[in-house]
Image (cartoon, rainbow, N blue to C red; front, side):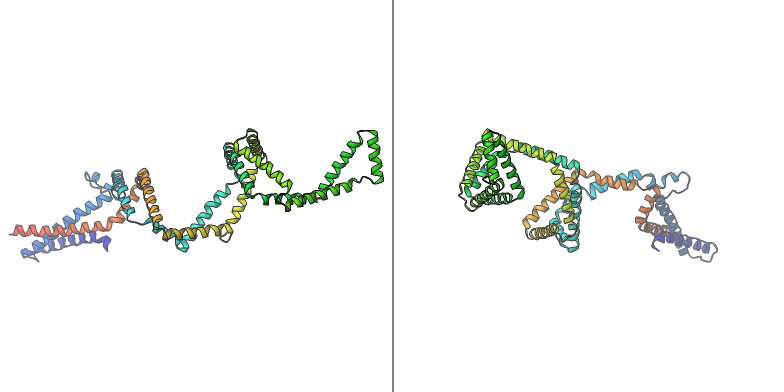
Length: 423
C-alpha cells in the first residue's frame, strides 16, 4: 500500500473533483460550501499531478513536448550525480578526519584480542598461519630461491670475520675445559675406527709396502727379510694387530686422562692457533679464509643449499598436516601464551592501538582517493536503468509522501483560496 500511496492520493483527489463537480452542475448540491469542497479537490488534483510529474521526472522520461528534455534527470545527470556522491563520501562521510575520530573512540587492540581468543576465530587464525607457512614452504625448493640464498650466504661468509671470533672461542673453551667432551668424543670415535677390519687391511697393506721398499734396498736386506718371513721371525699380520691394539690402548689412556701428554700437546697447539687467530696472524687468517672458500665451493658443487631446502620443505609440509604435530603444538601454545600476555599488558595494548591508528591514518591519507574510485567504479558499472532502479528502490517509498503531501497541501490551499474568494 505504501508504494502506491501517491497514486491513491491522486486518484482520490481527481475522483473527488469529478464527483463534486458533477453534483454541482446537476444542481444536486447547491450550497456554497460544496463549491469550497470542490475547489479543494481541484487544487489537490493539481498539486498531486504536479508532484507526480516532479517525482516521475527524476526517474523516467515524460513524453511531453518541450518539457521532456527536463525529465529523466537522474540518468541524464549521472556523471554530476556520481561525482557529487563521490565528493560527499570521501570529503564528508568518510574523510580522513572523520575516520580517525571514529578510530580514536574504539579500543582496537582489545577488540582484536577478544575476537581472536574466541575458539572459532582462533582456529581460523591458526589455519591462516598454516596456509601462509605452507605456501612459503612450497617455494623452498625453487631453484631461484636456492640460488639467491646461496648468493647471500656466500656474500655473508666472505665478508664476515670468522678468524677473530673463532680464536676467542677456542681460547676460552680450552682454558675453561669446555673442550674435554669434544676430545673424548673424537677419541672414542677414533678407537672405533681402529677396530674396524678395513683399518687393519689398510695398515697391513702399508706394512707390506714398507717391507717391499726395505727389501729393494739391497741383496742382504732382501735375504734377511725373506728368511725372517719364512722362519716366522716377522709376521706382518701379527705386527698389524699389535700396532692397532697399542694404538687403541693409547686412545683409551688419552680418553680417561684429561692431562694425557697427547691431549696436552693438542691443547697447546690449538691454544697457540687460537692466539694467532685472535692477534690477526696472516698465516692463520689465510687458513680460515681458504677454509671458507673450500666450504662454499663444496656447498655450490654439491648443491647443499638446494638439498637442505628440499628436505626442509618436506619436513615443514609434514609438520603442518594437522594441529597435533610438534611444530603446530609449538605455534598454538605460543600463540595462546602471547594472547594471554597481551590481554594483561595494558601498555602493550596501548602501543598496538597507537600503531594501528597511525598506520591506518597514513594509509588513509595515501590511498584516500581509492574510496572515491571504488564508489565511482561501482556506479559506473550500472547502466542507466539499473542506476535508476536502485535509487528508486531506496527512496521511492519516501517520495510517495511528497505526492501525498502535494495533494493534501494543494487541497488545503484550494479551500483557503475558495474561502477568501467567497468572503
